[in-house]
Image (cartoon, rainbow over all chains, first blue to last red; front, side, top):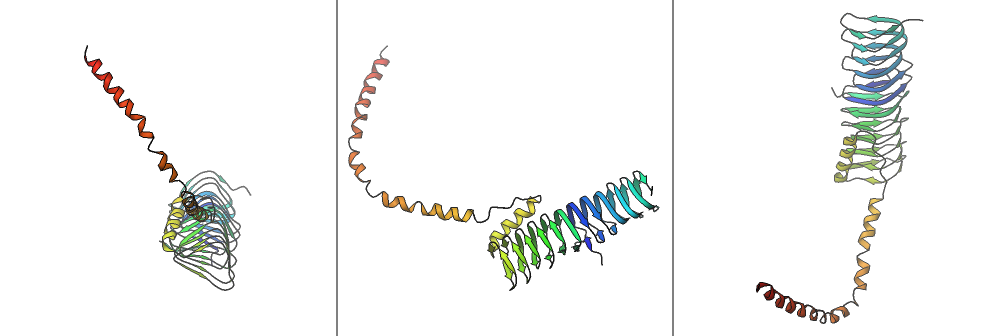
Length: 104
Length: 182
């Protein structure tokens, strides 16, 4: 069970700090931090600086992104911002604009 | 589209949550919550802010006002400091509530709409101030009524007043014809 789920239709303005998995199908503006996995669904819209252990993006993310393990930008996903992570995959059909830092 | 969102037990939100559908809170929220659907504040949750929804069920800790379009239900183990407003308010044995409770449809709608439209961070309203003021205003008119009784004496002095205007009217009448001659 995912710890925190922001469903479509819910919008959070502010700071989310967590130690469990977060799934975003709705909207988050501000700051998003978890020590666990974070996934942004196809309908998800995140306008925030993001940090997580693993990050999967199928929706929109605008902001700088940091993941301790990996970032997967999936088809249909859209990322505008800098990425800092050890492993990065960008699927065919994803949109990405920003700098990548994979320096371990 | 409007599914059930969850704020997990190990999650802290500092900010406002707004939207459609229902919300279940197991963790901590420092901000206002305005949902169109059901809101469940589970045991172990902690909310500092105002909460509105169609139905609000509380088993956790709340420091803020709760406005339910349909109902506010306070369950065992809940601890609330704030106002409860809804057409139906239920408080279960084992719950702690400090604040006003209004089970009144009309006032609810006003409060609910105000919270939903304000969106941002409505300042905590001064609780209980408006009602005491009303009762004070109602009390004031009663005291003067008794004091008015001696005044009829003034009406006896009135007759002398008309004497003054009479000579003036006469004076004006004399001047006008004199201007018309040249």
